Image (cartoon, rainbow, N blue to C red; front, side):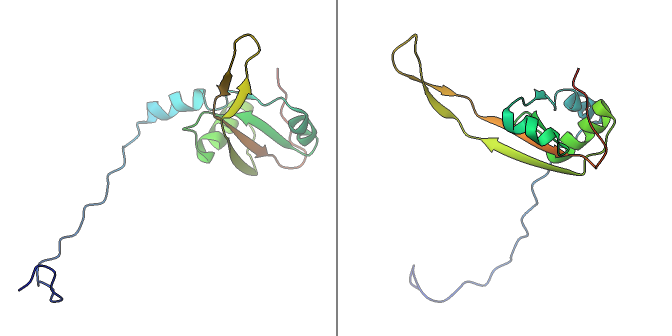
Length: 123
């Protein structure tokens, strides 16, 4: 039989084990929710959206939509209707004080839509 022959060997097929996901502790979930909504995103576009019931928050890179929903329920006592997450890329910026360019960090924000009549007050 040649090394690169056309005949196939008969053999046992082994099932691959599925990768195991880490089990999260309940206490870990409570600690994660504390820092999910880092701060409100204050821009002209975000302020216009608040009139329509859409609020924008800066969130960490690891946060999921379910984390944002749970944090909204815990912190503001409202149930979001829809959540959209946007990843913002890093940007090159010119440095005035020093010669050369720098980089703005990667950011992430969440658009949270509330039901009609519901609103959030930022303190």
